[in-house]
Image 1 (cartoon, rainbow, N blue to C red):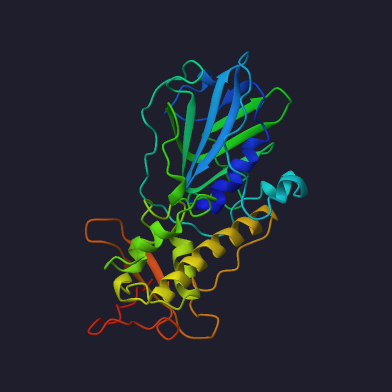
Image 2 (image 1 turned 90 degrees about the vertical axis):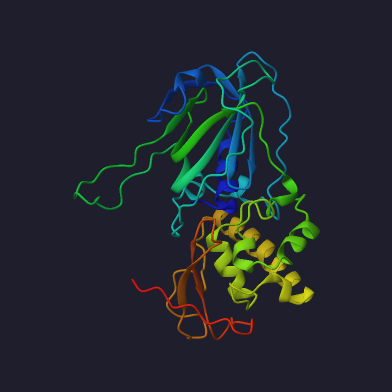
Length: 322
């Protein structure tokens, strides 16, 4: 599923339509009544971790200032990238994972500031947002048919432009429920809270995917930053030196920010370990599925030579074979 940098990019696309009235709607979703959005004004857009929130009000209501914080470190693409660049489809593989419900309650759109004024988007595998264009099939499906992806929601606005949402679930809610202190790309990200979480006796590859402390950090980021920090994914945070934990957190923040900026420039992401057979130094890469016994298991790639196991008595897991 799209990680924090991708959803930040989706929010930037949606923010271009803030202040405009919806004139026509469409889409295949059955989770909401799309006709409820007709004649509403898009009032605000926010992103929290892996969730996008759009606020809608009656067309005659005054527009309030956006509460969304600026995109971190060089929001250059808002003025320099063309729509075609910013709307380019995701080119890196991303994996599905359980949904994180972050709305206070489902509802239908209500009065300004009342229940149901926010629409929450949670994106699935290859979920995306496009502006003023539809996604086209670039390969045949399993049946050999060339069928374009079906939009879940299409919003046409008064200026003639439109937003298209693919592979996402939607839910009305009264307000976004989120903690900016846990959002890896937020200016309010709480470094101390994140370090405390990493010090736990759990494997660091589990902790990094815990959205309570690293909202927006997904499996691609996890794999890449563990390689950059030269830490074995099953290393327990409690045995790592404080300097190692600081370095791992620095890698998480820097990689996430760099990935966002590359997206805004329309550039692809250069991966070093994720879905690779060899690391940049030429060593054979291992792959296995890791996760807590009661939680979701995720595929993990690591280099045994660059990321040696540091726990005594722990065997290198058997690699996954395709």
